Length: 69
Image (cartoon, rainbow, N blue to C red; front, top):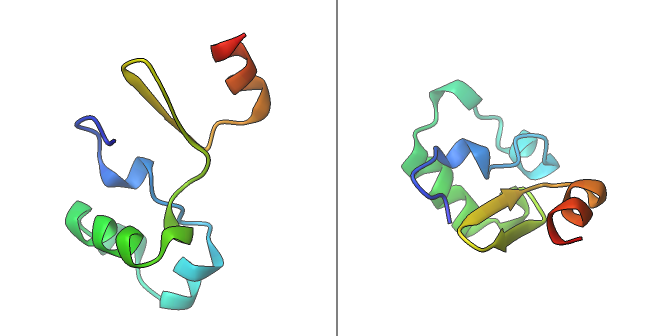
């Protein structure tokens, strides 16, 4: 789903779940971010939408309507 991008594009750093962890964003590797998302799904930026070859993370309604409309 990351399509060669950094895991940070899919990670929800604004989530209360992340804030509770008390971790420093800049010190986390991609593999650590993926591990956290697997353990706590609320850390994934939503919605995650796949259209054709592209994946969109946390796209708002107007963006999604433009993509499918």
